[in-house]
Image (tube, rainbow, N blue to C red; front, side, top):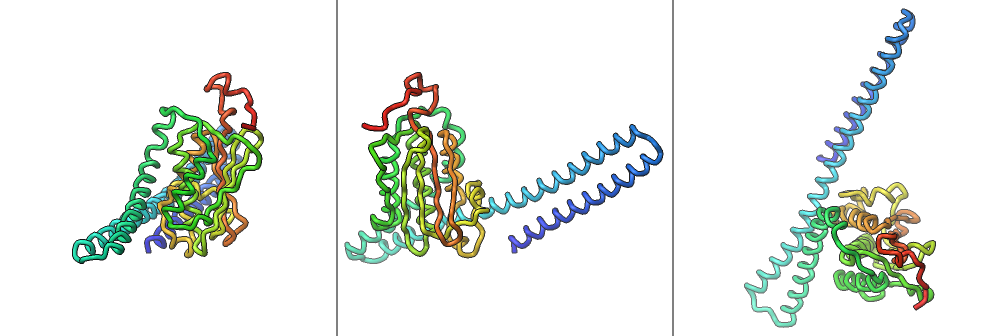
Length: 320
């Protein structure tokens, strides 16, 4: 009902804007014809300017109102998603604790309960950190010193964390070997880049309901950038969603996808972290049901700018 009400509100604003714009144009044309017949050139020019401003104001006001309604809808969806992501692991942990408190549980089952509770607490912590990161990301990046990061090692660590978090076999996520002995280093904040890669991997796992088969690959692009492509075989995307999925709070519409829980912040963080490191994040997909590729592009360490000193601009060998 809430969604239908908002859609009705958007339709009312659009209809009202169209009617007001049409009425304004009609009055404009009528007034111009009248003034033109009376021969008042100055008034004619003044009227054209006035009505142009009026039409622009009506159009901009309608656009603003529609955007605000949609933004509120996304924020409500975000609050509902976060509430679910927080409530579910808390309820699970509470249930296991009550069971342990009330019953004598065999040691093997007790250890299994501990393992599940630890997994739920990790999920809870990941949600809290994601929300906090979204609020803090833009405030501290320029204040932190950046270090040289081996992306190959970082991606391997992120894959291990994801496999453990989702209880997946090792072959579910594969990092393809890099061709040749090349240095895949970038200057950045390791914590944030790890957050970005884990968010992409988590998304790839969540949106692969028929089985997790994720392929990661690293490559140097144009001798200046490092590309990390993470490809899954999941639900896929329409081309119209390639840019929208990186917006704050945005969730891809659709009945099948809406059942997959999330905060709508994961890919927003990925894109912002990549951009604040001088790179970007993009999405591509062959189509619905054919998987998705998220690509992070980051500057190669020896091309990350003159601020690091003259040695940062000298090309380094791609061999060890």
